[in-house]
Amino acid sequence: MDSSEKKRKLLIGSALVATLLAVAMVENEETEDTISTVEPTQVSRSANERAVKKQENSAETLDVSKLGQRKFNPKAGELFASTSWTPKPRPIDPEEQAAREEQAKKAFVPPPPTAPPVPFKYAGKAISDNQTWVFLSQAKDNHIAKIGGKITDQYRLDAINEESVSLTYLPLNIKQTLTINNKLAGKM
Image (cartoon, rainbow, N blue to C red):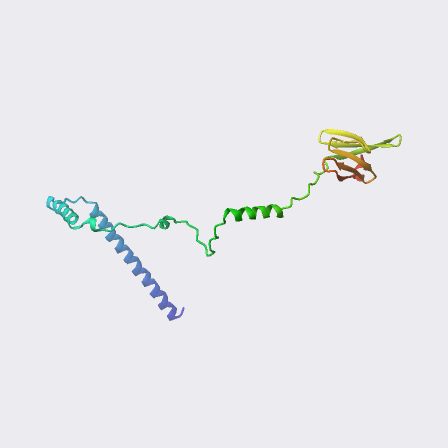
């Protein structure tokens, strides 16, 4: 170590020792103060009497009626009122509101109705006497239908081929297709 580094360490060490001594002295003073405040003190009656007289005199010299009443702004109580830089919109008259609603009704065109997804699963088919019968399952129910026949009150069987079954959703007269999974049919 060179001499400048030794001097620096000596200076830092002496500063540390001085700081510790100062802290110890301050702690001793604080404990003495707390002990003295804990000890009971007796106040003479004349001191109590003086304090009461001071309070009476100050009440007499202070004329409360001369103090003004504080007036509150009604908006001052709204701590969480929203503030915005955009101007407030002008009020709309009922006639203008009715015209806007009428225009919105004319502009709104509901989407065309659509059929729900086909609820059936293809279970198989049978051909007898030049008629093809299709077996369809729906949840716990099984249905058998031929071309042109109703499956339920809502569906009619239109056509059958190797890849799909064509159905018509009767309430909306919308044609739907149920694909046949040939791989599953071949494994069964």
